[in-house]
Image 1 (cartoon, rainbow, N blue to C red):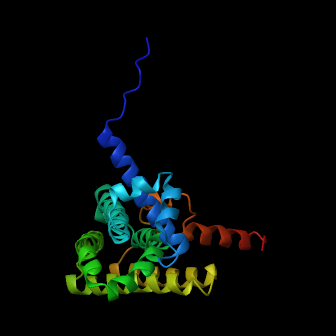
Image 2 (cartoon, rainbow, N blue to C red; image 1 turned 90 degrees about the vertical axis):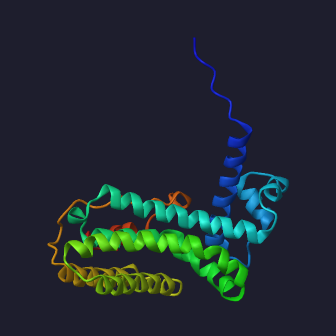
Image 3 (cartoon, one colour; image 1 turned 45 degrees about the vertical axis):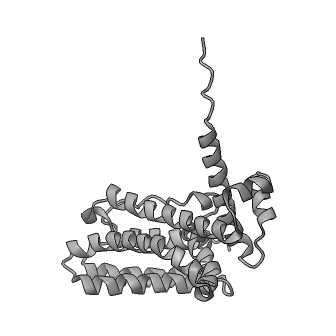
Length: 240
């Protein structure tokens, strides 16, 4: 006799609907931008009624804040799992930089560029986001500190190198809006990884590559680094 599947509780159904709305909002921010984002479109993306949306979120701003917090929570969780899975001596700096590039370029920074202007002019909105932003940066700091501590790098110097890496990644993603040139970004990222490897005293290819970033909202998109590798392989094979 086959047991009948367990029926979900009302609370489980509510949480599933809420998660669908959060994910749909993040995807809409990435695909359309904040100024074009509407709650009817989010409801359609999530496959729920507008009544269900207003049941879970009293205002558009509530939906935005919770969606951005959800996205940053996903990124924070991915960074912590990365640190747990790969002890510092086995984590090559190139792989960590590639992970950060994929994490940011797969949608996180595009969404960030949409909500930053609102945070600049809307103090309550900004204050609601600050705690989850701090958690994300704490996880980012922890992943970098593990590598630098093994190499005996002072914490202050390690922090500067992390900030420089993140500024480089953000700048490349922003520039890609008007300059879609994979080889251009690949060359810069490759040069920077070589500088970091020398700074840490690491050998090239010291360990297996890290897994892809854990960002469920963007798993359907091809990570930019993979596209760079694919395009380079095609050029080397004479495929244009």
